[in-house]
Amino acid sequence: MQKSSSPHALIDSFGRKVDYIRLSITDRCDFRCVYCMTEQANFLSRDDVLTLEEYARLVKVFVELGVHKVRITGGEPLVRKNALRLFETIGQLPGLHELVITTNGSQLEQQARALKQAGVKRVNISLDSLDARRFRQITRVGHLDKVLRGIAAAKQAGFENIRLNSLLMRGINDDEALDLVAFAIAQDLDIAFIEEMPLGAVHHVRRDSYVSNDQTLGLLRTRYDLIASPVCTGGPARYWQIPNNKTKIGFISPHSHNFCEACNRIRISCQGELHLCLGREHAVDLKPFLRGYPNDDGPLKQAIIDSMQIKPQGHDFDLSRAAPAVVRFMSYTGG
Ligand code: SAM
Ligand code: SF4
Image (cartoon, rainbow, N blue to C red; front, side):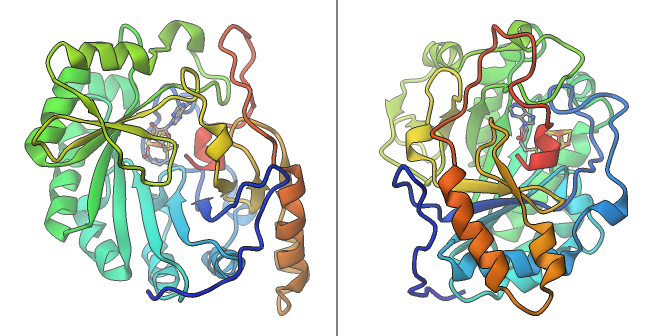
């Protein structure tokens, strides 16, 4: 991938430059994490999600509009049939500096090497517990050993960076923060703790399961001498480091440390809806522009440029409300 001097057409009404898209290529998943979806999750029919060719066209258009970084996510992106083909196509795009993925790790044992060869630079792998029984309780159906083999395969493949993503829930796995960090250090990986967000109605009360990252940081400080890291990866994570240790410990804290003022990203759902903010309903359906103008990117580009005017200033997560902030699950919009 080479650098290009693409113009920055995507600037919102608050002056924020959007140069990062997160693209969900399926709402389906081989796990059913309790904070992400319900046990009997209803998935879209295959005809309702975009084709791989449509995703590739969307990414090309966004890169032409100045986007430099693309994260492929889902649902579980690696359960989408022939997903690798999409990575190979996007990985060739001039102007795209960073192709990255968020995955639950279940398919990495088979696919890590090919992803690296396709041009994926960095991988985020979700890991909420190191205890096999708990891991199954949280994911409802997942196997920890498979994910650990996936992490090993990702290390072997030689990505520039691998970060574990951990979501702690009160009374379920909030006592594992120290063990998860010790694992990340031992494996030479980064780790980020994500606060649970009220996206979609699940079977538990989010207010009860919520663990603030300030609490997690306090727990980590009982064992580690942590120094705020100057490293900024362009995302919402604030990083800390242990002296003389490479592992970065990140905190993504939509509740306790709102990060909206520096928001540089937008999300595209697996159906082609452009979501201007994860925690708000503002969206533009790009599918009519994709399907209505198969040989002309002009109307699609204009719709994307125009959408910048409705990007909201920030999310409005409030755990004291009983209703979710938005009805969409994270697996639909793309985590
Ligand atoms: N299936 C992949 C995975 O689990 O990494 C990618 C999609 S998943 C939706 C992306 C990330 O979103 C995961 O790290 C997961 O923990 C996180 N996530 C899901 N639901 C969430 C919620 N309600 N609040 C905060 N994070 C959530
Ligand atoms: Fe699947 Fe990821 Fe949601 Fe878990 S967090 S159910 S792995 S999409």
